[in-house]
Amino acid sequence: MIKEDRLSVSRPLLKTKGFSTLHLQIFEYILIGKTNREINRILGYTERSHAVVDHSRKVMYKLLAMEDLHKADFKDRVVYPRKFQFWWKKLLDKHKTELLTMAIAPKFYE
Image (cartoon, rainbow, N blue to C red; front, side, top):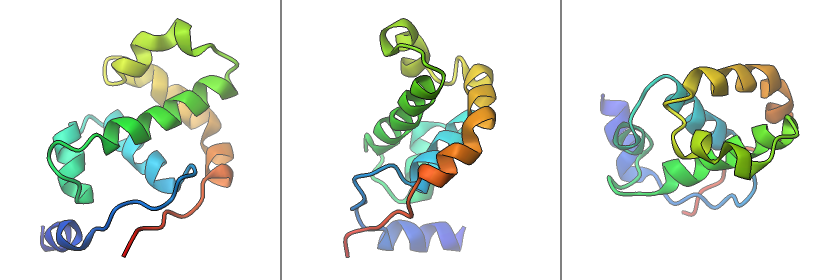
C-alpha cells in the first residue's frame, strides 16, 4: 500500500506518444477485472482521468489490426472490453509476444 501511495504522489504525466508497455499493463488490469478507478489509483492518475480508456483502446485497436478485423465491426467489444474480456484475453495471449516486441518503455514528464 505504501508503494502505491508513493507512486501516485510522484507519478508524472506520460510523455511517450508511441505504444508502450504501460498500455499493455493497463489492458491486462482491465482483463483481470479491475475498474478504471482502481487502475487510476494504482497508476497514480486522477480519479476521473481518461488515460485508462485511451491506453487500453490503443491495445485493442492493435489487436484488431493483427487479426485483420475492422474497428467498425467490433465497436461494442472496444467500448465494453470487460463484457468481452475472455475474447480479448484470447487475442492478447495469441499476440502478446509480438506486442511486447513493438512496445517501448514508457517515459514520463519530470
